[in-house]
Length: 285
Image (cartoon, rainbow, N blue to C red; front, side):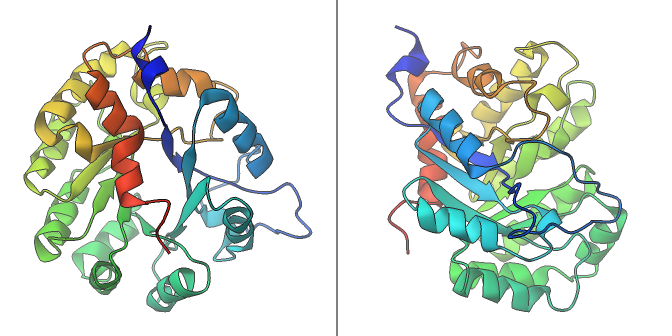
């Protein structure tokens, strides 16, 4: 029996959702980030979850809703046993971002936030301390913070926040875009393992790899992540619905569950369920 067949539960820790009903759930334009027409409906995702034995997912709010969380909020309310959600701070942090965090937690029931540091402007704001108040409040509320960044400077920011907020769960999204071609990127990511509340999300394998599925050139990085962080600080996400139908949901899942033979059953249980379930437990308010 293959290892993944014995997995009791799977938690997809990174999906995006949007509705095709633009009258009820209008989207906004984001400068420099054009919307991509993928089927991102809750109905499509639920069908994929059911077909692949995925019990729960974490919805990461997308910037195209410009702070209107109604579709995500309605989806979580309709399926509280299947979904949790985190908010998305604006790509350029306005003065109202702190108030937006309070609203998303209090009104919308969001269970964390995502910070984008993919633009030079955002990294400059991070250096200037513009995010510090956000992290401090997230720490007070015990809200996990997911961080998306590509530049090595992002590692320095994560380390600074981890030192300032030692109990705050921080999740580095998409392996910080570390690729086999740039070993220094991976080294900086692995150095973050010294901070016990820093986690790493395994996702977008097809974008990081220079090979075809199952993207075996990423295996050494994943071995190193397990050795440095331990599987209990790693979690998997499909990045639904980005770039679908290819690679398929099956390929995104089985790249980890079936095609990384160096992962033990305990490793897989942690990466595909336990880590995410501990950060976003089903019975949390």
